[in-house]
Image 1 (cartoon, rainbow, N blue to C red):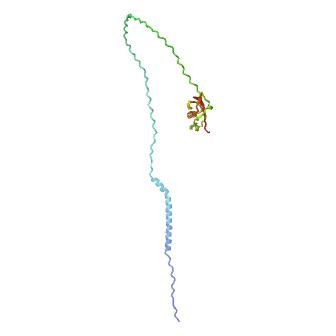
Image 2: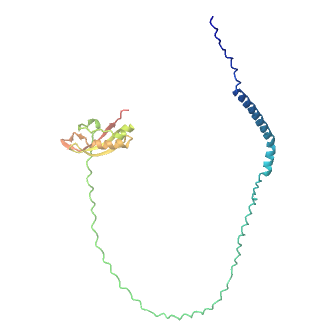
Image 3: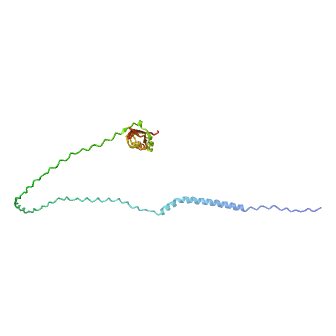
Length: 239
């Protein structure tokens, strides 16, 4: 028979106790002790705060400020009294009388008789009688100008009718009557205002416009004559 084989079995090793756990447990204990000691110190410090404040208050220096006393304002001295003017009394001075010598008596004046010359008689020559004044004959009266009615007047050239610009703006309208003296050739010789329109601008314009007119000559017994007419001139502005 084959011999049995002997086998050796190793015993299980016991796990060693960890050293780290002991270190952690020790540090926790010391930490707890430290926390407890800190609390005790903090409590003791809080209990000593009141005494420390009292000691600091006793040791702290005291600051004293001196405030100057405010003195009241001194009253102003009263103004000096106004000077009193002494009353001045007039002083009368007596003027000494000066004796004057009496004027000498006037010497008598002797009046001598002076012969007065007798004036020679003046002979007045009679003036010759003046010749009687001859009265000058009055100049002959000018012949009367013939009056022509406006309806009988005929124009060779009618007067230009121009309304002034200012009259247009102011809406001035009216009829101007002018007296025209026409010469023998039919031209205006004299123009005067006969009746106003109520507006000076229109009256002046009518006198200027009539200067441009030319009339048909008037005759009498076959001879041209001067004549006169009152011509109405109407100035109207569209409203």
